[in-house]
Image 1 (cartoon, rainbow, N blue to C red):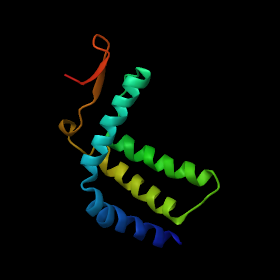
Image 2 (tube, helix red, strand yellow; image 1 turned 90 degrees about the horizontal axis):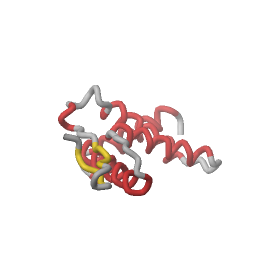
Image 3 (tube, rainbow, N blue to C red; image 1 turned 30 degrees about the horizontal axis):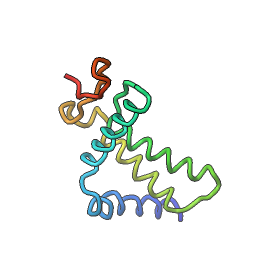
Image 4 (cartoon, rainbow, N blue to C red; image 1 turned 45 degrees about the vertical axis):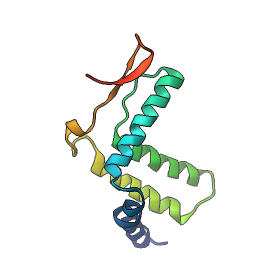
Amino acid sequence: MNRREVLESAIKCVCHDRQDQHGNPEDTFAMIADMWEIYLCHKYGIDVSISPSDVAWMMTLLKVARSAKGIVKDDDFVDACGYSALAGELSENRIPQSAYTPRKYDDEYNDCTKSK
């Protein structure tokens, strides 16, 4: 694939195919961020806030890591472009702060709870 084909495929995936299959990326990536925070909190006791844009960046890194292992697929380039575009759209300076509420680790209850 040339760069135009990669980018056009990414646009098709992000703006149509994946949107139709998985719904609004803002909602999906916010849910993934919540799940990753809870996992890290309970598994390692880490007090971390993951934003929807962090999810998009980490998914981009997943695609980079797969390619770095030597098995290169066109899909990895397309998906990396799509995730990177979503990271730009979801970055905190482009979404209202009310749409993203970080979690905090609560030592007293050894549980993750939404920030107050």
